Length: 136
Image 1 (cartoon, rainbow, N blue to C red):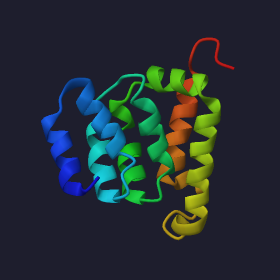
Image 2: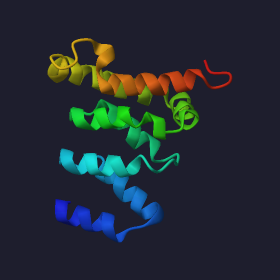
Image 3: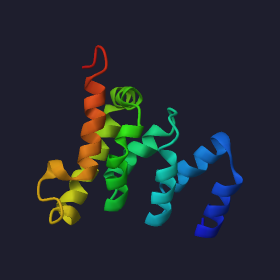
C-alpha cells in the first residue's frame, strides 16, 4: 500500500472501517504513516484497537513511543489494564521489544531504561492491570 492509497483509505472510510484502516496503518512500513495513524487511533477506545496501541510502545521510531506516553492521560487505565490482564504474553513481548530498541538505539538519549518512553508506557499499562480488582 503506497502512502497515497493509504491516505485515501483513511479519508474515505468512517466508523469501524476507519478504525481498521488506522490499525493497519499503524503497522505500515513508513514510520510517518504509523505515527499519523497512531495519533488518530488514540481517540478510539475499543477492544480491538488496544493491541495496536500497546504494540506501538515497542516501536523503534522514538517519536511514536514519546507521543504514546504523553497521551496516557487521554486513555482509559481500566481498559488498558483489562487488556494487559487478558494478554500478558503480548504485553511482555512489546516490553521486550522496547527494551531491545532502547539498548540498541536509544540509550544515549535515555541513559536509564525506566526513562525510555516505550518502557514508561508499558509500565503504565502494567500499573493499570495491577490496579484492577482481583488483579494477579
